[in-house]
Length: 299
View (cartoon, rainbow, N blue to C red):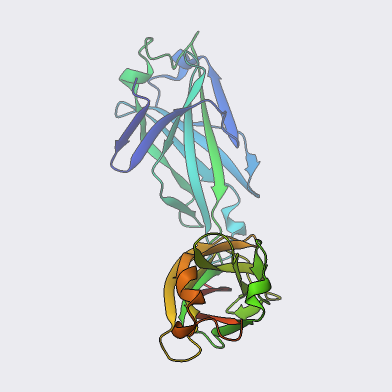
């Protein structure tokens, strides 16, 4: 017996878990085989509705199994009960269930009360003792019913280019007095999220600069956030700024930083003729060129 088969959209997979909605066991299969009448189960409740399983043995050489909704007249006119339906055949030999589904949503209404599979499993395989479906003239079938309720809202992620107030400037005085540790700017808000800059002035032979994602503005939808930024070390005597581009998905947690390990060498920084360190001060700038904003909106 194949553990998985796909034909015309129907998938058959073995699983260990019992069906969650209904199990019907026939102790005396030989009595009903070959007869034309269906077996209709007792009414059972699942997912807020009442149902029956309807079993046919021998329809054109197949076992057929259907799910029927009861009291369909209680469904308001023009409405439907949408079901993700799985039907099952127990395989006692393996202590597993053959799970049959086609992935299509079954739309139960006053006009269409029954859905299932006319060719659930062929009789030759089902009655073959080597396959293990029938043990001591007993076999079991089942159903699992999941009501599909279409979502009314969706999470919409929008990439915003050049968002409002997207340039942040950080002037750092007394640069020569800074120690071997990380320093951070004030937080600034762009899009849904607060950001800040950070660096260690004595981490090596070059000056790094990183952009950190912080918390979210009130009522924002907290998700991963795209941050695309031009990081600059401002030239205080000309427009010859040092600029590096950085882009990343920032996780929901705060204090995750992405940036560059070298925006300028310390030798160039301390070269007074170059104009980056003036009066013992440097100026960083972050231009947020693209961020994501997330909203919950109607579908």
